[in-house]
Image (tube, rainbow, N blue to C red; front, side):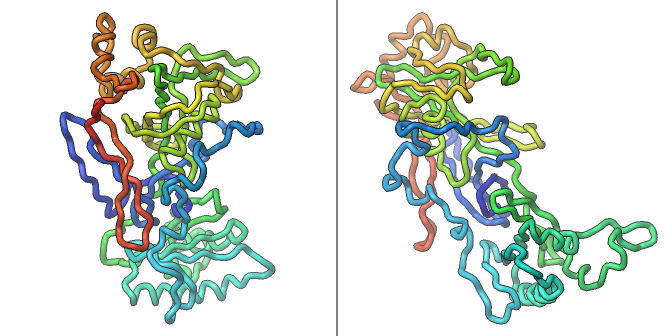
Length: 396
């Protein structure tokens, strides 16, 4: 998943779970290659609705901050996923070394008459080289224009007579047999994988299991929250949904929570905002194509309150006083955030002034009692620091 188009939790993934009164203390985000954990992003196949394509005005940019102010790891190059540059040293094919001793080969698109037989002979020598040098896995990125190689290299079902569905498959092709791992729609490549340690368990996980999204909990200095209504029904006869919700959506490839939350808010409502922290997230299963979902709620501070909705994505947007939301609305996620992060619940309806006063800061804006703040984790000197979100008991 070198393009960062999705997330999977796989081999050598360490999860440190620290709990204090059932509150998550830390979230660790990283990007790695096919044999590790890849943190997520917007797989276009999982999107529930198309992105709007109408032009944006100059005041509605996709990124809320100048590029110079962004964290260094917000723009992740796919080359950062490799642990060393291209290697030769006796290998017939040029390749990159991935984390956990993976060998990655990227084929060029077909130009003229590519000699696939010559490539297969080099691949056989490369597999011998990688095995002798204790690599764990081999990865081929095959352009769609050379998809015939996929048919040659992937295994086939053997019938009762012992012959494969590909007649008289050569012993060479049987030795070169790879597994189909995933399709990279960003680069129009088909990615094959081969485990190189036959006497040990294949530790490479299957392709993406999760999609990741985020919502903007945009809270103004006068304690109003920004809410939107979506559309229901077919485009020719659509009606506004009844429930008010937070603006949000799926992350684009390479985006941080900060970038994605601010982008989704400005796309749907036109409101520019600044990222402050992560308030909550859910983890649910059983979505389309059997995938799972992470959805993070990010606290944002608006830099203006002027609303300019995208009518393709939302039917309406408004600022609603917090007291009004608590007494008139029933959105379960927003109520969960208010109860767990702000200690405000429906039980406080008769005494909201007292409850709000306890969590106001010196400027009058309410402050969460617990949140996950952004920080860095640095591994070595060559890598960019990884964004890490750690629980913090807030002070007003």
